[in-house]
Amino acid sequence: PGGGYVGVIDTETKEGIGLFRVTATSMLVPRSVHMSFWSADGSAVIIANLNGKMIERIDVKRSQDRKITGLEFNLSAGIYLGKAFTKTEDASFFLGQNAFGKPLIGSITGSYSEADTG
Image (cartoon, rainbow, N blue to C red; front, side):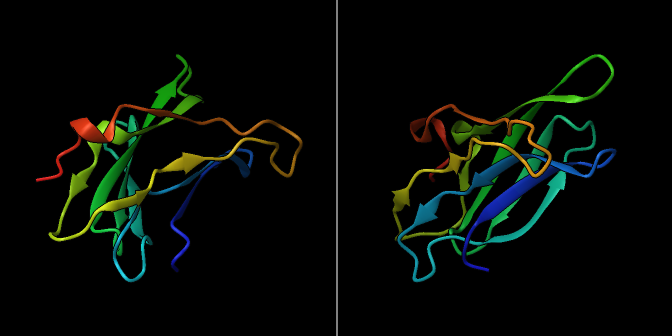
């Protein structure tokens, strides 16, 4: 519950294709993923970082046949939902291979300075 991980899976092949960890903040439990969901057009994954008091986003790039070709954790898209806390660790992504020996995809884009830290 307190790990803050988001995995993206190809539903046709059942393979993991990306793994991310959301932003940590100075809250007692620094991060947790309460829920995540796809945008209506499939261009993003919206993440509720419950204990981190943030909404965050992974931008999804697709080929013409709608296969996922890129996953970018967009730091600029973050929305802070609370007061009196600070970021303690940046969001991250993991490289390596999935259980089928295929490479995981992922990157970080944007900047926390452009996020809605209100």
